[in-house]
Image 1 (cartoon, rainbow, N blue to C red):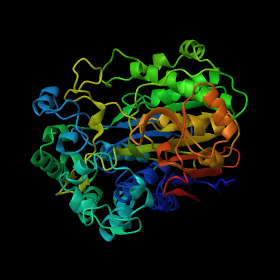
Image 2: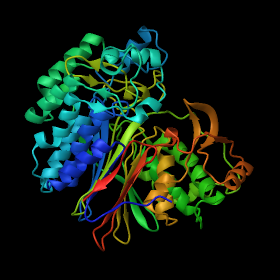
Image 3: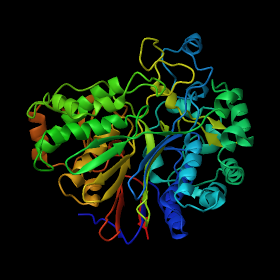
Image 4: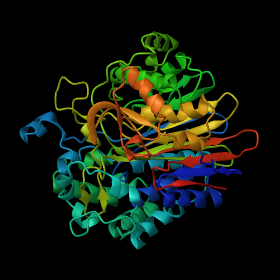
Length: 531
């Protein structure tokens, strides 16, 4: 059984050790949790480019020690030229996943860093920007070792990815992705980060960096305009929450699918499952997840749509009605195909109890694949969340935000414990969060065991296209037989630890002694560090 690392006052968890080391350094220098997370976000944007980057989006949950929870939406809208007519005229039936036409939404992550630093300063943060970005700049300029997870990733639409503007020159060697352990340098990205450290994060949008980005996007044929970039600003939004028997759990509002994670937990707790790691535990989560996804698709719209109130789906009446429709001995039909995506989640809790749960992503591995030559930024392909069918609720429109799989979790227990948790994993993220959360919160497993234990995902995915319950091969065979007897089409992944089931992490601060337990997934290249 793995042991949960315990730290005296503060801790960080990240899917790459370089990011964890950066966070630990900032905490040791007196920085607060938000400052540490900005620094970690910059570092991991360099060393884990297949999962995230400064050309992508981010979502923040921050809880102050006195209890106030902040949510920051740093996701970008589609460009002014991103119309259905434009894509149809090019012969597309759907948004292309790679290349300039896939680079159709503004990257919001860096604006989120700026907004987060405003909050950090309001909470007493004093560290300068250049200190927060020092590690990222050094790693980009001097080189970092390519992580093992990068090579394990299946590259969807690989030919289009490898031929996207700037991709081969930046990420390939002899036409292939280099092996793990080889050193990669990205000097243009180092220059960009150095400029942001000196000029401020707004320069990414309304300064020299922004002008270079806009010129390069126009040159390669992206539908994003200079004005789209200049006018973008990350937003403070109201977090969604649900009260459970032992805690209040928080997540992000639309365009994030955070509501699905909350719905899944709210429904599962109405099932009154008594014991963990039983057929009832896993069947109940799976069935709650199916109903949560069905409700999610009714509850998520562009944030500009004032007619829809996501919180109206998180009521006791909704939970009771939906939970009553779950049969505890029979599997319901599986939902529509799942989407896949690559993401990083990181957490931090400081000595004062300030807690951060943060997700940053370029969506598919390496996003659109487009690397902008003047800045070294690789741009995301989050616009894949749009439809080219004008009757579809997710129909593409200029200035509209796409559906987001990203959803960082945060929970406050009735006994005062504060939990920051999250995962990568594309659309199945709520399923993964449901498993690790209930193992810890409901059934008393340690953080390390909760994250280490075998996981499943249901639905379809690119690497397992059948609509099955895909399971890591460490489950008890009797449990799998019981799930199969309920009607779940069980498909073993043939791996004890599968990337498809997410790279998750959890940190919890204990009020009695101030200690922080922190773990990150053995499926990732990271871990936890602290003070």
